[in-house]
Image (cartoon, rainbow, N blue to C red):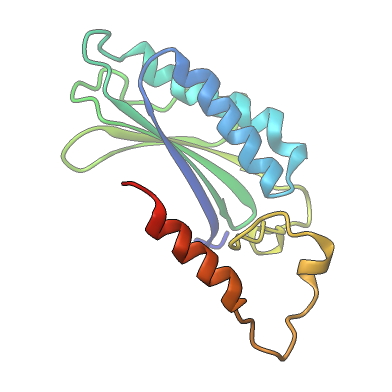
Length: 171
C-alpha cells in the first residue's frame, strides 16, 4: 500500500455526546463530496465507534477536544480520531467489525486511534474523483464557458453611482 495521501479532510469537535452525530455527518458529507457513497455507512459507523471510544473515557467536567480526520491513502480510506486526554486507560484501539485498527500516542498529550476501510476493488486513492474547489461552486452554464479574450472592465457610470452613494451615506 502506498503511504501517499491523495486527499484529507478533518473536523475538530468537543468531546461530548453531540460529537457522535457530528462525526457521522462529517464522514457522510466528505464521502459524498469525494463521490464514494458506497463507503458512507461503513465509514460513518467506524468513525462513530472511534469517537465513542474517546467519549467513554472523557472527563465529563472537562471534556477536551476530538479531531476526526479522513484520508484517502493507497487502496483504503483511513479514519483517524485524535483526542487530547491526559489519562489513557484505553490504550488499545477498539475492534471494529474485523477491520484493521490501531492506536498511537500523540507526543505530549493524547492518542490517535485509526481504522482502515478498503476502497472498492480496483480503486486506489489517486483514482478517486475529488471535488473542484474554486471561487464559486455552482457556476451558471454561461459562466463556465471559457473566458473571452477581452479584458473585463467596470462601467464608469456604475462606479460613479457607487461612489456617490458611499459619499452621501452617514457612517
